[in-house]
Image (cartoon, rainbow, N blue to C red):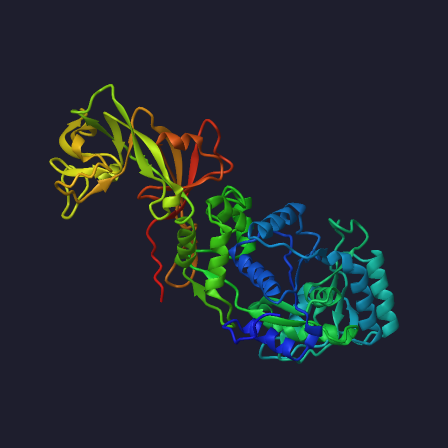
Length: 548
C-alpha cells in the first residue's frame, strides 16, 4: 500500500483516510470516462494523468470507459483517437468499457425509481421545463404531470421505449424537490427520446439516459471507489449521491471528488469551439500543431514525458485558476534538451565566400551533437569556401553590443575557424549578394589555439551540400485580451524556407532536433517525405516562464 504521509494532493489525502477506515475493502479503483464526441485536449491530459497515476500509486485499477449515452454526437474516429492519446501518455487501462453496455441495467434502475414514486414521465417540452425550473433566487414550479400514478408512468415509460413517441415529446424526470436551492435537484430529466442509430447498440434503443443519471450507475456497476471529475460537476454531486441512494443496490457506493480543471493562457479548452474550427477550416484538422488537442501537441513535437511532468507540477486543487502556458513549454524544453541532437540550420541565408580558402577543398568538421550530453558524440559537417550564415547573424551597420558578423569584425564559425568579414557585395537593387571574408587556419576548433579572443560564435552550413527544408513556425492560436476574452490569432502560422546541413536530408517523420540557436523542431509526420523535409517548431530555446 502507498505511503500514507500527508501530501499536497487533497484527493490522495482523502483516499488515504478511506484506506485507514478500510472503506471499499482497502481497494482503489478509478476511471477515465471520456465522451467520444471529439478529440481530447491538454485539459483531458490532466484528468488522464490524475486518474491513472492515482490507481498506480495505490496499486489499484483504472478503467477506460466511454460515456456513449448520446448517439447523435459520437463517432468511432473519436474512440480511436482517445485510445491513441491514452497510450501515448504512457498509460494502460485495466478494462475498456462502454456506458452503453449498461443500458439494460439503467433501464431497470429507472423502472425501480418509478415504482418507488421517485420518477415520472413528463410531457413538458425543453423550453417549458426550463421555464418551470425557476431561478437561483426563485423556486421552480411543479410539472402538471408530476403526480401521475406509478401505473401510468410505467406504461408511458414502456411506450417511450417501444418508440411510440417522437423526440422531445416525453421525458422521464426524477421526482426530487422543485424548491431545492440546487437547481440540479429540481426534478432533473434522467431519460430522453432520441430516434438515432447508436454505434454500439444499433437501433435497440430509442430512449437514452442522461449523463447525470447514467454516470453514478456506471461507476457503481464497475466498482469504482473514487469518481474523480472536474469542478463543474460539484453542484451535480447531490444528484450523483441521490441516484445511488434511491436505486439502493450498492451498499458501498462510489464517491465523487471534484478538482479544478486546467485553464491555460492563450488556449481555448472548449471541445465545441475546437470542433467548430475544424469544421470551418480555421485549422487543418484535430491534429493541427496549433491545436491544444493531445493529437495536435503530439504532432507539434511535445513529448509524453513533458506533458506528464507538467501535470505533476501543476498539481490538483479545489480552486479554479489559469496556468501560464509558458510552464508547459518549459517542461517540453527541459525534456528535449536531454534527448535531441543539434543541427545547423539557417533561415534568410546570406552567402559567405572565404576568399583565402582553397576553391577545391572541403573539410569535415567535428561538431558535438549535444553539448549537455557528451554521450551523444559528434557528427561530421562539411566546410568549404562557400557557406551560408543566418540573416540574423549579419548587420552592415551594427547596433551597440552586436558581436556577430559585420564589416571588419571577426567571429568564430562554430566548430570551424575564426572568420573576418572584409567586404559586402551587393546586387543592383542594393540587396546583399554575398559577404567576402577571410579565415585564420590556425584557429580551427580543437587545435588548442590560444591567441586572440572573439566575442561572437555563429552557425553556418556548407552552400554546396546544404539541404533545402520547409519550416512551419507557430504562434499561439488564441490571444488573451485584457478583459479576459480570447480572439483568434490571424498570424498563428508562418512558413519559411531554410538551409540545413546534409544529415537533415535523412530525417525521418517524427524525428526531433535542436536547430542550433533557434529552438526545437520535429519532422512533421504527415508532410515530411523522402523528397521534402517539413519541420514544425516545437518550442524556442528561451523560456518566458520563471519559477515562483
